[in-house]
Image 1 (cartoon, helix red, strand yellow):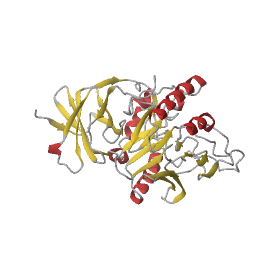
Image 2 (image 1 turned 180 degrees about the vertical axis):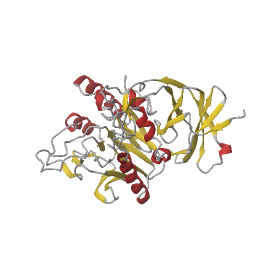
Image 3 (image 1 turned 90 degrees about the horizontal axis):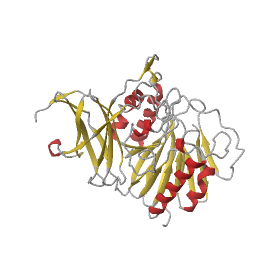
Image 4 (image 1 turned 60 degrees about the vertical axis):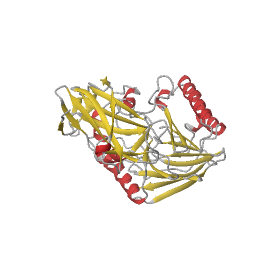
Length: 402
């Protein structure tokens, strides 16, 4: 077939997310406008010629969950989102372990024209040593573009100094997850084009400007494994990166005891089924402790389960204050904000959990921080870095004998 190739007009919000086993699986998400009749991906190892690329077709589903949502344009004017499109989820299998891949997305219109995306990249797991960047709470908001500039800026510094294979996102990447234009603009950032992102649904990602709440915003902005419990498929999920098990949670649907019980039962089932994982890591958005004075938050709900099943590392965000704590073999870390705008008030003396909390940090209302993670068969090493890429804190989590 002879295609007429167009610029990237029909394709948007392209992002790479983890498959259940990232050694051989990867999930790709994108949107295509309503004139699209088919869409597919051409992918190949980074060092291969495009002539040897493989084709993978995907089936789209009509998506209107963001349509007519009250929002803001970059110039600050009010408008209603015009977001009716086809959402594509492609679950790639049979990939080579520890291999860097490149891919392009194609969309064919009813007129036979074909749009083609830029080149995107990801790396499958399987290497003995791997690295990740951990970031959260940059609240992408087009009227205030310096928010995402600050977050991507610190990621660039971490990448240039230390390098990393993929990104762990701990939520609140959008100011309003119901504003699809926010997701669409965010995904144009280079860091989304060059890396796999594994993320959790934050409270801001879960809401509209007018506080309509649903996990459909997160679900339709990503393509994650569908191994979560009922109602949370693709929102709560688990995956393996090399020999580390990651469990990703959605706080928004466990606010009451019934919701928490469903999440806890699923977490226990996943931990029990993956008891041989070298590292067990649980990620959610809400903080384990309140960073200003140290009061207990989500730690109170989860610590007994984490201890019983040998969780090594618990990651969170939301509070905009970095906190590192340790309790009965579990290391708890919550990341600071990274947008230089929504940081917390100055830290005050601890009034609770002095026996657990080891270190706290922020820069007040204007905070930019993110983390680097290096994992070997013997240990996980995590570093907190400030806006200049300077190390502020460091912790080593040794591998346990399973």
